[in-house]
Length: 250
Ligand code: 4G3
Image 1 (cartoon, helix red, strand yellow):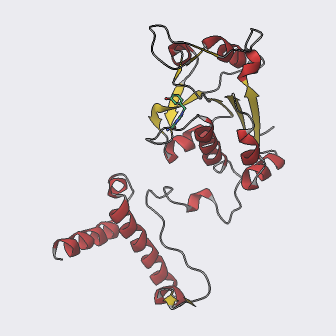
Image 2 (image 1 turned 45 degrees about the vertical axis):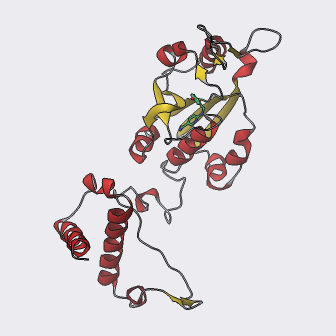
Image 3 (image 1 turned 120 degrees about the horizontal axis):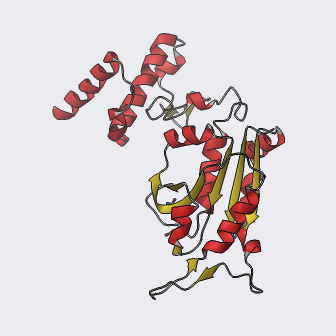
């Protein structure tokens, strides 16, 4: 049995094909670690035109996704389920998606994603079907498919065995609450641009100190909001006070 199953309800299942057949996500499927089931909920429409939307009560423009096809699709997918999974609605009105939310979702064995392309879902979908409404950022997209892929990707890489030990999730930005330090590889000089001497020194303790300071400096410059919740040592705080001092005196 896979560690986690993703059910996706969408009107555009083909959008997921490239994503699911590429790289780490494909390998995770091949290893049996994750399982993804993409369903076109239009197949649950009941009329001969397979209608999934209708005009809004109260007038105005645009179309609204009808409740019936989505409720029936969810009922069908969950008919043999012992437990109801989180049912996530992708929308710009949702709670901000974060690494913390990815970690929480990775603790479930089953997740369901509802993706819409319309101005709106009938509010009864939100209130009686969906358990959480999530946004991947303060911007509007043509549909919820890309946000669903973002979440599936970030959750999958937290499942043990999906990443090599090598690029394990414990290593990246946010796992320590800070942005990553700069990386370099060979050659040590390229078009006159040099790798910092300290990384060529082979002095382990100094290199670790440099990396920590670079992470702190980058976070302080680009995302000072993250410093409020990052776990910092007294030495980190001292370094940050030095950065503040240096700024005030320039
Ligand atoms: C529902 C999610 C869905 C209402 C979806 C638009 C951006 C995001 C949609 C709505 C989306 C996001 C589809 N765009 N920021 N578009 O996560 O107004």
